[in-house]
Length: 153
Image (cartoon, rainbow, N blue to C red; front, side, top):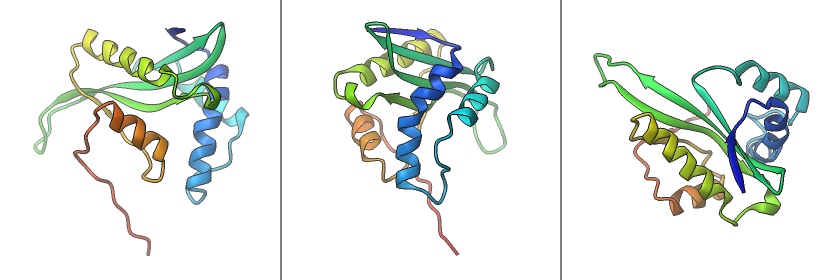
């Protein structure tokens, strides 16, 4: 297994399909159907933004997963103290390679990036019905400290 930083937006766009399809399946009201060309252009537009880091997981030379993280530096406001965090936008491992430690290894790499940048907080969110994400992050010791709620009118 190899984990490395990448700017290969085409591979990220391809690997994004499984996570995006799950979001579309669970929440079709909010998510569009997966469109490779649109995803490719989106990732192409942000992949060189210095705030974002993309990690690629390869096994025997085959791309099998990725993580998209953001280095956040929230300034102090009258309401909150300044703080830094590593925010996990997405993490995904190809379905046939799940439950083999690749996701946990990706998260360890994210923790190392945070430590190397002097950051002691990793944040993320996931959709409530995404049981895969819920189970994965619970296993890794993530704790809830905020809830996002809505009401349809």
